[in-house]
Image (cartoon, rainbow, N blue to C red; front, side, top):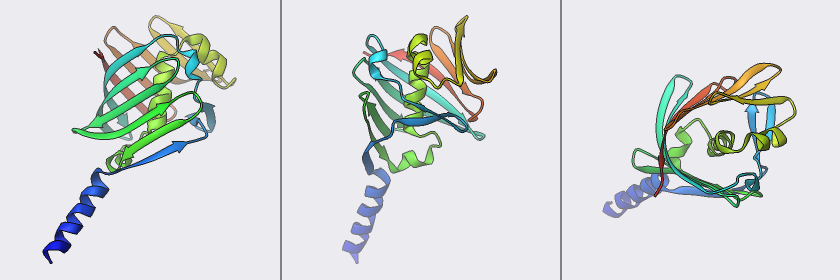
Length: 185
């Protein structure tokens, strides 16, 4: 009986703290309802950026907080997300494939890791790269620390920048991030 309880406890812990790994394709996400987009090539990002992002995510009346370590280079984007001292997921993209590892806890978060990765591209990639690679149905503009992505003159995504924070609102998909930034060491 004692061994059965120990085995059951170990199984529960493995399921709760364990993870799944996958090498995903295709590299699509829905930037708006019914409008698919491809992740941008990593080579479009010039430079190196390493950040710690404290993200407040609002979706469907819920607010969740995650902390993400983000590394952007012309070769790879990597995001490691934590919540409540547990790893939610690690996602990396090398321009041709996505590698994702996620915990069972990550399934309770309504924003899939590929969307967070895509939104990081929308935030940090040069305006010219977004205009070149996003679907032709979208218009991308930037003025006074605000980047707008619109479809048929309707604002889909608004990204507002300040010195130490970013707010991304996806008005059509009904989610938002408030991001406090810290440079990674």
